[in-house]
Length: 140
Image 1 (tube, helix red, strand yellow):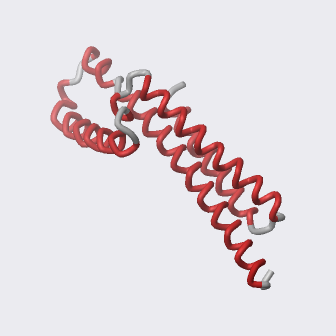
Image 2 (image 1 turned 90 degrees about the horizontal axis):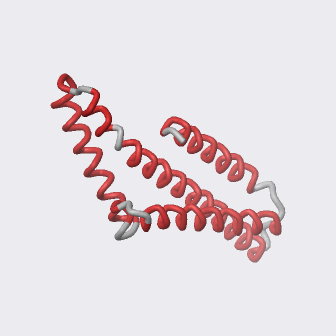
Image 3 (image 1 turned 60 degrees about the vertical axis):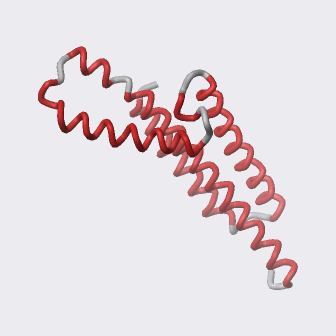
């Protein structure tokens, strides 16, 4: 799968999460609880997927989320510096070496999808908590 196709998945996932969050306020408590459980399971599944990728050799995630983020930021800064300094010199061999950045792009997209799923879970859980609080306060 190309980086462009992966990025399209990110857009699709954001749109799905946004639609769920928008409909959350109109759902029954049982449906909202089910959506919270599903969002949490999806977020945990994506996190497990990224951890499995790290176990297969990706140093970025070897020490956890923060290490992956730090490595990615360092890589982006390094790529920007290299691109500015060597753009005019780039030949086919150098282009192939730089193509390895696709792996980093895929990691970044997976990280973003996991973050969207975690955000969806957090928002849906907050809506559920507000609904419970309102019910207990007798305002619902």
